[in-house]
Length: 543
Image (cartoon, rainbow, N blue to C red; front, side):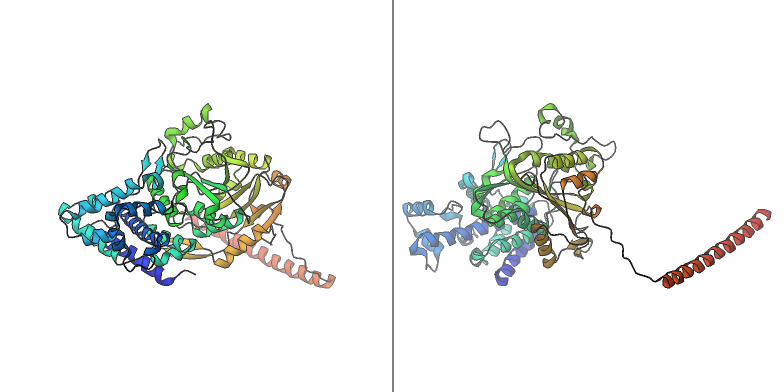
């Protein structure tokens, strides 16, 4: 059960950090997200370290001041303690503790001590806690933060204010919480900073969609599998799926061109006990230079599960001709969108990610991809060729069409396509959930459709059980899909029901008489109006 008290205190600490930024002219600045997320992570890792040392050293278990006891340790004993910690725990030197900085906050040039501490923690833990660029460079946990304060004489005061907020809070009670708690904390933490994830990244995926995908995609008892998202953003989909499988039973692989997204994803993984996957988080262009290769290094890695909410429309004209070349023909078998004459930002990049995902699945792999609903019925071009391939290869498990505005930042209707390479001879379930949910305003302007918990569960139950429900879900076979010109839209397969009312001959004649009288009146009125119009036209002509 999530503790409301610790959630409230955690949110208050985040709000306090934002207030400090605002007080020093950094509110809504481009650097604010970096300060907030890195300081939050520093606090989390500091408290997690103190929590873990009490578990591995019996002498510290009941310590009233564990930091003071750690500082009093001789160097050899402290080194042994560090070696005894779980690999997912960040290693901290004694001078890295928040309490150490707090006790020295009146030092001249305190900002330099603050920045050097963060940078040193990043370097000290770079082998475990870094993420990589496409060229194998390691991106460390922390950078100097006080440099974002323009007035140099205020930098130390800024760092002191940050430390004061951190020392007043503890994560200790949060470590007993599970995924739902940290998912909510993470969403609150980045809610003001997820509006622009960069060139290829899409908007934040709603938790409702992530939950639906995870519950449907994963059967019970899955172990030792890998999960992949080629456009991971902040990691909502892979984290939800990993939680459903069990964090200890899976390894996550991601790539995203946005550095900001990868920083958020790293934080998300650390909060949710998936530190072992950090080395598989890559910052780079998935389409042009995919980085996850097979063991032989002569081809792309294949995955058990792929989940993705790729960007829908993005200008990739600079790389379009390269991606359409022979070197990429095997992966992009359905083709590459052409560059529009007017609006390059409308290039349908999601079609490229769809092909990449299908290509990257194992022979028994499963995937769930968020696509524009228009993809389901497009009559020509790349979308139709992709659907044709999915049907020909008999790998479609089903489709769910979601309500409009399920994303607050776009009016594009979306659907979820479920791929299952083992669904060769089974039925396909098509679901129309577009009428569910209720509207809520976001930030006082954008509207978002929110699904009730009961509605989410209803979608999951119906899909998992392959149930048909009038005007909501329908089971079809591949032959039916081919007859409907490869349409994946549920509405085109629903039965049209005509209600019949039994009438006696007398009742029928009475109804027909009523209709005849009504028609005569309508025709008479029409004739009268026609005469009136002609008279008016004559008057206008003679005048």
